[in-house]
Length: 376
Image 1 (cartoon, rainbow, N blue to C red):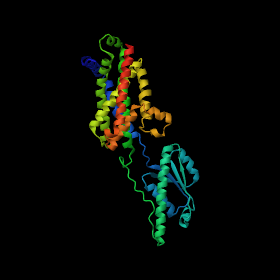
Image 2: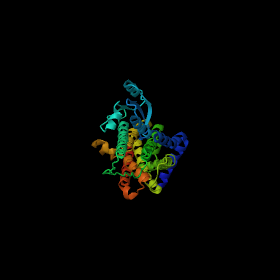
Image 3: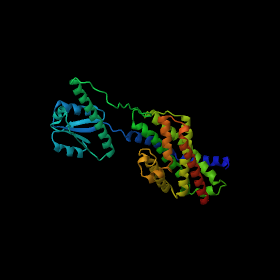
Image 4: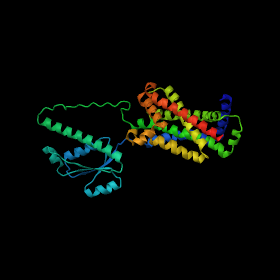
């Protein structure tokens, strides 16, 4: 491989990029647009759950229980209802996703020290939100029970013994439990995987459509030199995109970055080489740009979103899909970014993921070179 030929091919690609200003702007703007849309729209936090209350008891005890639910940040009391017939229409209209029904003998049972059943109806169309909301409800109910029993014991003049277990929970790396801190690092990996693969997937296929491929074939440039020349300009664009996406995550979304920026650039460089190489491999196989774009969606976008652990835990997937995820480079870069952003770890922890990205880049670039050689 001669550097002079690689430089000439890179210069040719740069001239094409400069002439196609709209594509260049799209390559810069689309990652920023995606980080804003996904960062603000995609949230796993379940707060301010709309709630209706059917209080058939109407006593200070029942009102105190409803007030404790409404005063938490998890539930919002929309309104009180008077009849059970109002529950079903309200759930149909999504006026609320939870209805609490307090029976007429609620306070009497509580004061008597017996069980006081409370009916809670959830809209189960969102199973994940329902599971989280029911957990919140059980936690607040337990707190209400402990507080009420403590007050009764104190009024009786008895001593309150300490509970046998005193849990003191401490959450590391994301103490505020913000889903944004979990989503943005993984989202950055997904965006870079999709955008960079798409950039190079259109290069050789564009040469085929415009008829300039024959001119390239007539030159002494080897397949490795041609691919390297086409990869280098987009590598620079990819690094710029990564800086913009990470900068937006840190400065706008306030996601903490506890790792090394130098290590991020080095690992990002390795990841970009592999993803750009995958785009080049697609470009050598595809007959036109439309086909290349469709192959990018099937081989880069869907796997990086669904099989990288970005949103859906890999441990919960079927065994077959878990095995498939090992071939998805975004899986490893998601782990790396979460480690750099939230944990501040280095190569002593992340070296297995980095090693796979190096192997992935080497294999993909070699396959692209061989596939293009067959075309020659």
